[in-house]
Image (cartoon, rainbow, N blue to C red; front, side, top):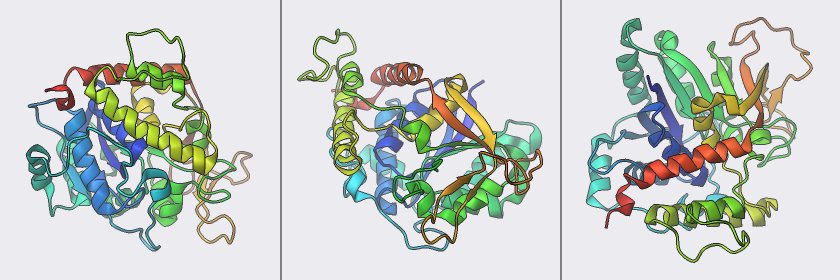
Length: 357
């Protein structure tokens, strides 16, 4: 039976790949998508999620609904990351269905004015069926404001949540602060609320995601899946399909910003996609359970995820406030991840409206 998940995101180039994987993995039943402030403005995040959901779904079949969520952190000033993701969050993209397209507009009209937190609760209740159905996994690839609000308000739905899988945090080195990773830094209080919630959680930090680099060799395999790799430094002039061209364009932009901002010369990391890969193929990950907290008041380390590697804090065996609350991904089987990534691209190629002329 496919695993029921809800995806909360802030698209974002790597969020786009997470959406593609979620929509094209038969092991997953995507109940819905919510968007949040983070990589781009809240309005752009919602528009991007709608465009991506339409483009990466099956032509003529119902799509998961996309709900706009929190527009700001619980306490702090909202951020955007145009330096990495461009002004609209999907810098460089070509060929993606426009938000003004009537088919995307119909998706937008289904949820316009509706609240993400209430939509998450409704989907969880409908799936759980008071214990007669199945539990839901919550996946978050951006700031965790929506999840913190949902978990705080709908306490009665705790038994219906199987686990929370999130991309965020870092062990020892940050990417938007000396020790802070961007998703956590955007709303550290929300992340602490989620970490204290008494159910299993999986944290996929940048220490793991920085292992999964979209190299030129992988880019070649994306563009020309049926060709050998004679010159990996020279990409094919034309993508095999319009879908592959679209993905190529936004990943080229992502590669350029990661090169100029962080010095990643081999390619960009596909951070958020690892959440979906973990759900489908947990065997690709080596994880260890730790106590994790967020630094909320530090002068130099605001937003840092404090991973208690040496067990300084006395903890019980629960997943909440007093326990070792998080599985932390430490290593990833990179070839295995990219095999899965390319399988999903191949599935999407067969059904995406982008390939219909």
